Amino acid sequence: MLLTLPSICNCAFAQAADQEAAAIVEVGGAGSWNLKGGSSLGADLAVEFTPIQNWLEMEIGTTPLFSAHTVEWDTDVLLKKPWTLSKKAELMIGAGPEWVHTRRFGMGTNAFAGEIALDFMYWPGGQRRFGWFVEPAYEYVFGRDHEKAIGASWGLLIAIP
Image (cartoon, rainbow, N blue to C red; front, side, top):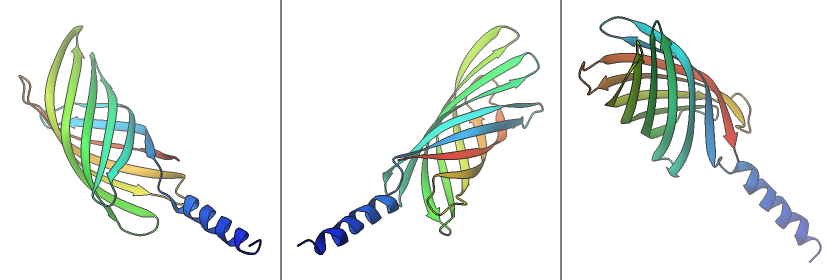
């Protein structure tokens, strides 16, 4: 009985170490380039979790973007299909709705948008606690101007156990 207890404990600890994170926080920078002209830079903050292992990842995030006389807040919910490229690299493609709040010359507007994104994640350590991401995206705003933009976000990944 005493000889089997250490082997049971080792199995339990091994399973806990291999377990996927409950959520992943993305923190970094972002840029957006309007296809009609103009660009903006800002920050990116998102949280990602896995409702269906190997099939569905969900990302909820917000990005404040700044340019001359304009501040834009993009808040999105993306549904992504993940692919594991290696022990250290993942690729995801996703799409979803986005709410865009723009404040230009003191006047605020709100619009609904759609977004398509490609997400590349790299985990340099074997335990996947910290990593890097790059996420290029295309956005179409269904508001009055029907804006189209290409954007990218990049930064640090932090796994939440």
